[in-house]
Amino acid sequence: MTTTTTTTPLEAMTASEPTVLWNDSADPRELAQSIAWGAVGATCNPVIAVSCVKADLPRWSDRMAQIAAERPTASESQIGWQVVEEISLEAAAMLLPAYEKFGGRNGRLSMQTDPRLARDAVALADQAEAFSRVAPNVIVKIPATANGIAAIEDAVARGVSINVTVSFSVPQAIAAAEAIERGMATREAAGHDVSAMGHVVTIMVGRLDDWLKDCVARDGVDIDPTYLEWAGVAAFKRAYGIFQERGFRSRLLSAAFRNTKHWSEFVGGDVVISPPFAWQQRIQDECEVVVEDRMAIPVDPAIIDALSELPEFRRAYDPDGMTIAEFDGFGATRKTMRQFLGADEELDHLVRDILVPAP
Image 1 (cartoon, one colour):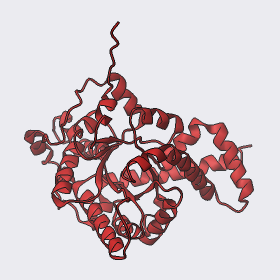
Image 2 (spheres, rainbow, N blue to C red; image 1 turned 135 degrees about the horizontal axis):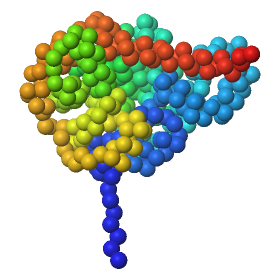
Image 3 (cartoon, rainbow, N blue to C red; image 1 turned 90 degrees about the horizontal axis):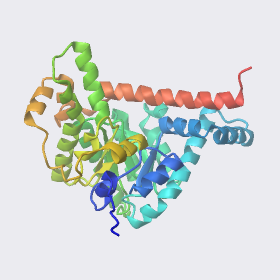
Image 4 (cartoon, one colour; image 1 turned 90 degrees about the vertical axis):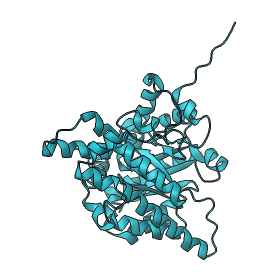
């Protein structure tokens, strides 16, 4: 009798380096399955924390009540952020073997700085440094905003490994990578070993697609709608080429999935692929894409030409399309920051419902 073993798409991708899989969730059940598929990283932020709390509400309701009793003067926000930290700690422990195996390059759990601190670069760096002490394999998410770029450099110089977030464009990715390099140089000059620092620069590819779709709908632009599914891919591939040319020590990370190209087009690159768990399931169960090295294959020039008619694509695709001062005003940035701030509010409301139940 012959036994046939079928390799799933994600298992084929993670069978060998350099492309690696991280799980865009800290839910322990999802993370355990993702690790079984080869994942060597994960993330937590207020949006994910709210989902984790809702997925196991009895447990976290009891824990919130316990924290409130232990910390009688703590605010709703402080209690909520302690829950975020505890969810992150569980996920970090699950990833510790990969962290040790890869010498800090993988096995990372991403914790996100509070978006309400976005106007204060020093406060962002301070919180990043505090989060980095939660567990040895924590990597901290700081947004690619004007203040965020300054905070990234500061935090790296303090020894914090960074996952750049709220990033959608080539100029943001380059500015963030340069800030990381400056921080690394400062730390090295002070005599510190930086070999175990594991920085990544996220490009939220699907959110760039989303923003361009909004612009097309708003302005009544006539463009093949399938081309809009390639914008994030094009920006990611262009940024990757620049990262390779300039020798940046951080890796790119693909996030905010909207289609299967957001992983399949990056296979073969020295990058991190970070799909939400639901997308991992879809890729495993339904995807018929052949897993092959596609990072070096350029996006069809006709698609690039058509997308380049859109001013917002040019801003995102051209390495000089935006200055650091212009990052905060980019539409995708504003939309994403509002969502993260909204998740903070929702987490506060979850805590409030425990502390002051409705009559």
